[in-house]
Every structure is written in C-alpha cells, then in structure tokens.
Length: 270
Image (cartoon, rainbow, N blue to C red; front, side, top):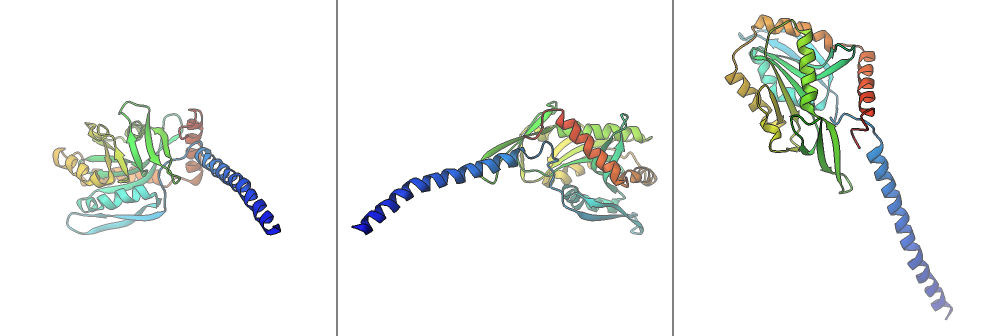
C-alpha cells in the first residue's frame, strides 16, 4: 500500500514538474535566440578570415618583376576573387585589396578588391553571404532571406551593394588623374540565390555570384577596347598602392564612421 502511494505521488509530481521544466527550457532558448538576433546594430556580412596574398608583375615575355605584398589580411571573399582571377596577372594585370580611398567629406571608403587591366579598372565589392537575395538597382536596401540554425526564417536588410560600389568608383575616379574605363562588379558567394533581375543589370555594372565572375570579366575583356598600356597599369598601381597601407587608426575610424551611419538609419541588420 505504501509503495503504491509513493508511486502515485511520484507520477503526479512528474506530470506537474516535467511540463514546467520544458517551459523553462523553451523560455531560455527563446531568450538566447532573441539576444543573438539583436546583438549587433551593424555588422558587415562578409565572413572574414585572414589570408596572406602576394602578387607579382609578370611581363608578357615571362620575366617577373619585383614581388610585392598587396594585402596582409585580405578577407575571405576578396581571397576568393583573387583565386578566381589570378591568371590575369600573366596578362599584365595588377591586383589591390582593402583600398582605403579618401572622400571629399574627410572620411574614407574601402574598396574590397580591384584589378587594373589593359581594359580598365575592375572594382569588386565582395558579399560573402548566403541565402536568397532580393533588391533592385535603385532600391536603397536589399533583403537577405535565410534559415537560421534553429530552422527559423530570418530576413536581414543591407545597403544596396550597387550604390555602395558606385561610391567606391566615384571616389576612385576623384583620386585618379587618369582617363580610363572603370567597371563595378558586385560578387556574391555561391551560397546565394540572386533574384532573376539582379544579375541582368546592364552597362559597366554587374552583380554576379563567384562561379560566374570569371566569365563576366572575360566578356568585358572580349568586347571592350583597351584603355591602358603596361606603363599606365604600373603607374595607376603605384598611385593606389599607398591607400592599402593605411594605419590602424584610419581603419578604426573608417569602421566607426560606418557604425555611426547605420546606427542613425534605424539598425540595418535586425
């Protein structure tokens, strides 16, 4: 009899306690989900990892010029762009990464990667993010839709990368006393699915995934006339190279200005 009573009370206790414990656990999970989604007012979405990149001039006769390190800590997206296009060095092209160009307002704008070629200058904006990407050429913000680690659908808003790279191109032209064609190419990772009309933008601006980057650059090289001689390429390279060697204070100030800008615009990433 006593055993039966004990078993009865244990059973009742489990019936009451287990649901309460489950509710507590679910509440804790929801709390940390919310914290994770709100923890950053602004963050650049590119997944950065350090990778040392070294490029060297290779003359068309096969002889090599002086080796020069163009970026000690290129981001992962920029490193992928270089890996995709590095064969162009054999054609006399030069690469630069993380180029901090001064703007008229005293701030800087950072170009992720650029390639100086006989056809002109290619300015790359790297977006190493995943998910379904929607947005128009004239929309101020684009939308990234993806599933988080809990299986929930998440939408993030980010500044139009075409407009972002157009700022890079304008600032670049202002510091260059050179007449040449400048191409703007926004490069998303292959983990993205681009809305149909995003990758069909015409003119000197293109939005592509990494897997189609080389094909896009080859199309420009095939159909565009040459703008720059070997001397021009080297001159522009030497002019822009110092902008890759800025101090940590300049880099920190650049990040601070970006954070302040996006904080004032009501939290781009939510």
